[in-house]
Image 1: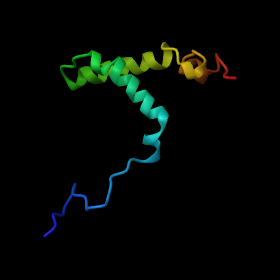
Image 2: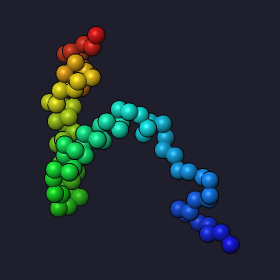
Image 3: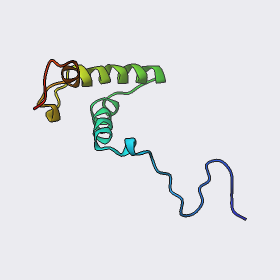
Image 4: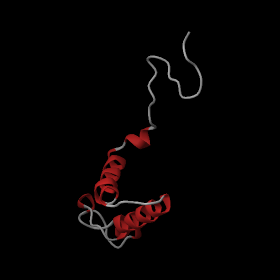
Length: 85
């Protein structure tokens, strides 16, 4: 008898993430989040983690220069302060 129910996958069936989660942009973003924020901090509570990640993502978008954007910030590109060539 085969096990059935929620969370049980049949042989040959793979869980596949949507294409948006396979993009190189997303992979690179999460690598940066892990190495520049998560692994460097010891969050005591989920609230601490949310606050730390919110602060990091604000930094990532408004302060941290990005090589792919000509060392501009995503916020500067988005608002039109900097144009990409």
